[in-house]
Image 1 (spheres, rainbow, N blue to C red):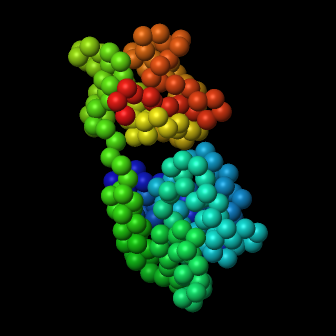
Image 2 (image 1 turned 120 degrees about the vertical axis):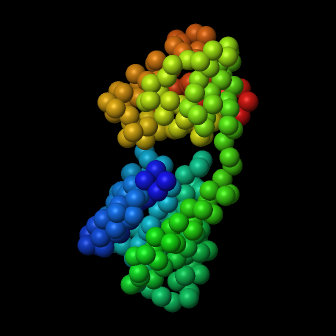
Image 3 (image 1 turned 45 degrees about the vertical axis):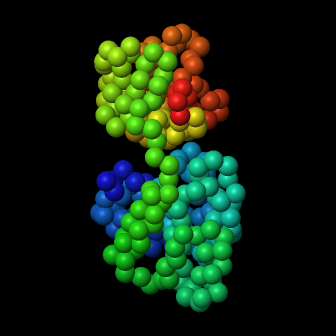
Length: 231
């Protein structure tokens, strides 16, 4: 569903940025805005986005330079789809944007409904190219059914709260890859502290020795990582 997909809009024009945020939020997306590349870098450091909408011409670092930086980042952030918006309509500018790694390009002014269709098309392509996470993960004597959000221990059901199930599913979507604690906190009751409490409870349910976790690991300075046996 679109409300599960988080977009970042980077544009120094407050009016355009706020109009886009309002329109895309009405279309069902979660939307975050940044007024320049520096602000975008800060928010990207702590949140994974499904797609970024960048303006080319901004004071300081422009959208093309920001795209080069993102594409050079380690890990899955570098694969974040990018739609470039610009007042320029010249072919050379479009070619330059596509060359540095932009997925699509729209010249201002544009029809908002076309923007939504372009976003949907980019997200479909990205989803088809993304590896499908395993449907079931082995965690020692435990197993986690990702689709159902259900945990078993030696085949017996283990009760999970809604928050615990959601947290496990988020971590299971990127096995062996750390997920930022601040990103997890966005959807957790109680924020970062709530995430820590859920992790502690999950370790008691999953780990043989919760004080020395094998499967639900802490990644210092980042957040948490799920390290199943078979993924």
